[in-house]
Length: 182
Image 1: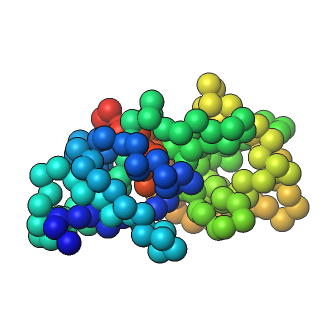
Image 2: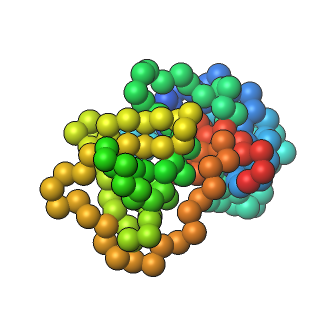
């Protein structure tokens, strides 16, 4: 490899790499010119040739960095579909107004995502299904849920929730808008 960076594909739109000219890497959203990209078939990976990354050693320094794109370059989603960065940090309340906490993490399970919510009572896992998630209100920054029987918070010490910064905190590689301050 001549400095190509191998990235695990987390986006639902892997073909998007062909049309990109610039990508942003890491928490600082450092811009890199995308010279070429190549999908690696069934491996769910992509090889990226980035401007200024010309050796395996230079590519190795970018290991574990998240590949991001600006919000305006994100592929438009159909109604009632959201990028992870839009969900992370939302306040979670029940349909009767009880505050449960904040979406701190999103687990990808294959069939549906699961929102990890941290609140005063601990952690609660919220399946991202219509029977549970009743409303996503991005304008007011909240997620309204109807808990199914047996869904209660599990006592645990909560980590500091991630700030919503406009960047995708639990990203899909290739779809994360750069964060202006993160």
